[in-house]
Image (cartoon, protein in one colour):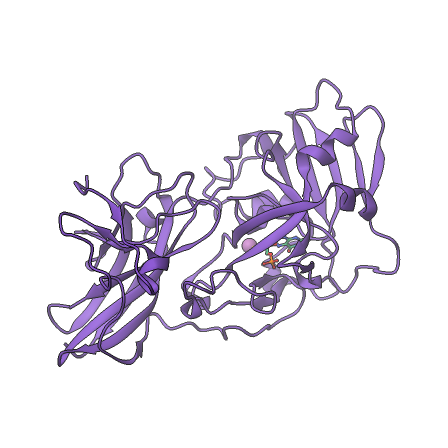
Length: 383
Ligand SMILES: Nc1nc2c(c(=O)[nH]1)N[C@H]1C(S)=C(S)[C@@H](COP(=O)(O)O)O[C@H]1N2
Ligand SMILES: [Mo]
């Protein structure tokens, strides 16, 4: 455990936004600011094998990997043009008919919801991060972004129907047909997920993103957003909500993403799925090289995201998890979105280092960090 008296530094520049943790010493204003002369960034390895900040592919295989190395304290909300894309606006979607959402299944009287019904319930929902459960090094982990959303709370949408006594779960479905199949059958038609009432207590049907009408690729006119759950649950182009019972089978989407959402195998029944939530995670997104009084200093800048409570117990390992040291310059984590940290590093020798982040608190679950999911390598050829 860390034995730190944690105080938060307030400084005029980056230190203010990053926050600085200190132990015994009095706060030093510039402790978390980079000092000296910037001499460029060095690469995090492996390098991506996909283009960043550029939309590629069609249908289910359409992608836009957001370049996370651009993150700065004043750009922690991703603009709509850069927000990551996984699956483009379906070319088979008929956008001439007025949108409606069927509300049926185990209800007393099925009905449909119009966009006007949703607009009447819509309210600002704040900033939420979305991450694709398949986020990986090939796309420089760029299938992750944060936006400010507004939409209709699911709890209020569901007030529109009376559930039958057997109804225990909610199936949310979206349009999911494209004329071009996914390469190698990687993605299959059908986008739907089954939730409990409790799973959806903070969820909403989003109609706006960063103050604009939802862009087409992000689910226009309406998508589900389940705060803290992986992107695969955040169904786009939502067209049906049905109440189901405990015998409901898992959807194709739930099975397709079972491994990536850390399920135990591929259960047949929806009720046997764990919540597809994001544990506390962290990784570096940029390595800056600085010259300070004639010496080379590397400065790692990274993000911390996910989790179910705020923590400031971030640690860093340069030997793949064998030993960790505290990251003092970090804002406390926020379960809803990412926060930034930085770490000034003087490597003892040249060579390759395997960077893994940790959380020095045994009560905090970190499945992906423990798996090495977000491990990055740094090759140091000058010290
Ligand atoms: N209808 C539909 N909804 C979908 C998908 C899809 O293929 N079809 N992909 C899901 C996945 S895997 C992710 S990660 C998110 C991506 O949302 P974004 O493209 O707006 O970032 O949408 C989810 N919703
Ligand atoms: Mo995803």
